[in-house]
Image (cartoon, rainbow, N blue to C red; front, top):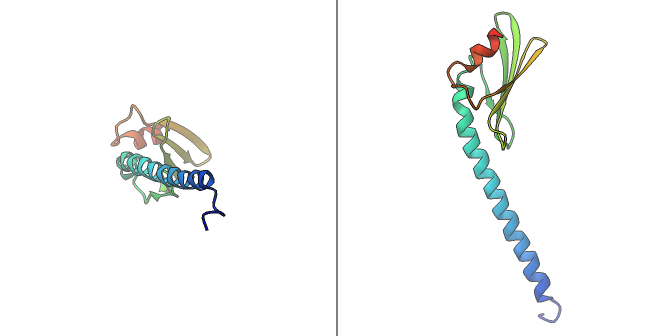
Length: 110
């Protein structure tokens, strides 16, 4: 059997599998940490919001004062960010310098 298996080739394939599995776990851990950092911002929103997809993001929509509001919180290398649609207006908010408690009411007021 060993005459049909090229040892350097097999070593390369096994190394590729190990690297792929390690990369998957690193990305999953980073997303979990970012989700835990975004959770206080998501809890400040007065309507239902839930995790969206595999990445570090939350999304939800609801109605406030008769206006349709849609929110998407994301995080990554640039830090936590929020996109808020109030009716037809769209706001992009950098959450790095904002407190979780008052950021959403500030966006609605603008």
